[in-house]
Image (tube, one colour):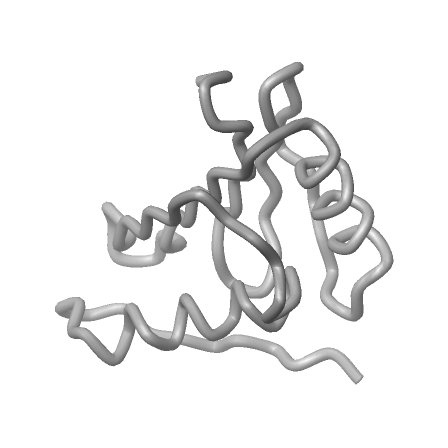
Length: 102
């Protein structure tokens, strides 16, 4: 069963950051190796937080894309390149990028 995220973003607090990181861990898997993660709060009232996950290589990038495709949350891929991809899912904009490929 998919969990819907109905979040009203006001002033961003540490708890909001923890919530977003928890959602990313649930979506991508809590044992996933990552090089770095960046979280940016929404820039407008109804906007989505943006999360960028940096991974070490092409295979982790592909693995995460497959995991997202076959997961329980609805997903809309927004863009894709040789170095990464961006999707909207679970109330956030998620980007996965290969380290050194930015």
